[in-house]
Amino acid sequence: MVVPLCLKCKFILQLEQSGENIMSVVYEILSNIREKPGIYIGRQSVSDLFMFLIGYECRSSELEIDNTEEDDDFYGEFQPWLQKKLGITTVSSWSKMIMLYCHSEKAGFEKFFSLLDEFKQRNKDLDAQQVNNISEPIAQK
Image (cartoon, rainbow, N blue to C red; front, side, top):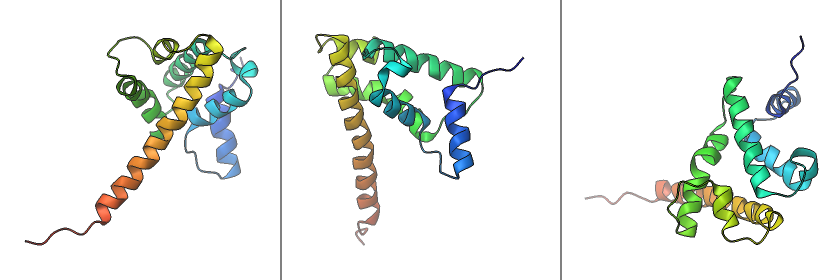
């Protein structure tokens, strides 16, 4: 029996064969979903996107495919970052938090991607800040 490759496996194989570095598979898939949501999740829906990503993460875990650092950052830090940004303490998913501020699933889908851009920029800002902190001279006593 031939088992079809999951999307993550296909992306990894394509990247390895092309000689490119594997930076973040989840961000690559999110980029594709942003451009063509109908192909991946059927419609522009933040709830459907959330369920897709949960299934994707579960499938990767079951296949024992290691996440990249960026994947771990998204799965582990996006929700806490969003809670802090919105000033919400909840056990609800990030999709439900976004829907508190949106009038439709489509608006929530669009809001997710603007928040994702901000979240990813936060990583760049932190990296730049860390470089600045490292490069600052240490005061001599």
